[in-house]
Picture (cartoon, rainbow, N blue to C red):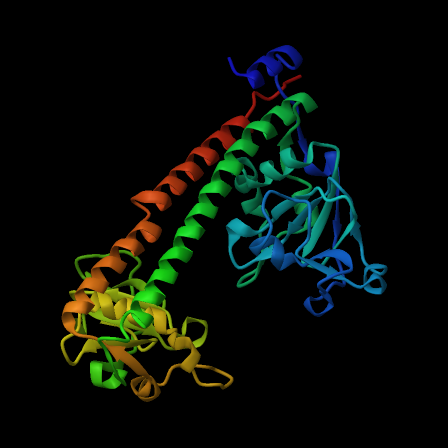
Length: 390
């Protein structure tokens, strides 16, 4: 029997009371703080977007600050409050919560709520991650492109309220999982940095002695893919639509025809996808959102993939309202071209390194994925109780 089971048997053997969030706390909307108000020092401040991108289950320090004159007009969260981002383009991310555990008050932007409650702060934040919370939350989400949930709706969601000793023991267990995951993420990030450093050294400094500088257009054939209607793309392969369809961000789905039947590389050519590099082979369809790259001369396609990735072609996009990569401009960009024997050696080495830091079926990515699945399983299990009935 675990320590949590022992505590439940001792303190609440008949079950756990479930209460609406509105009965154990109060939701207050943040207001007034804009991105332009953020500073590098001053009063601790959190913009709702940072909850999505920067903060985890809890935080003791803020990434940003604001002026005292601005903070004086805003609502303040206190130690133990939850900071909740209530808008997102992704339903799963709506109502992402961080427990504020810093020693000072923090101000919060709009599109977010401060939740002041009576429970253990981390217990509350872990609950906001759980399947139990997500399942209840979905019916309250509204909006089309931007999805949102209101404080009044969140107040209706029910949470198990075990004794404080049980809450703290659950937090202690889940904190261990969180720490292990953070350590794996840090190690994986370090490996990725090593890989990028080695790729840069191998494809720049190492090639200088044996390579010659020529335009990309002399090494590769480059052309934009062909437009296809979104309605013609299937999410999964079928007998009628068996061919992978690639755009500027990689695989988009499957279609009924193909326009390439060879090893190719794609470079994203529009908007935020400019410079993204992907590769594929066989019968595939390439859309107009990608520059399709095929060899003109002796080229190892693994070397080409890593070479174009290292070159950061995004820097050559047009400076306009809708930035993009012009195929003619990309062809003029010069690169180091090395003998095919060196290409094959470099491509093989870099493929192995890339696999170690990217392939979710082996190495650190696989271990991290397994750890996350384990954490999610135990989190949901630990936050599920027999409900107390009258």
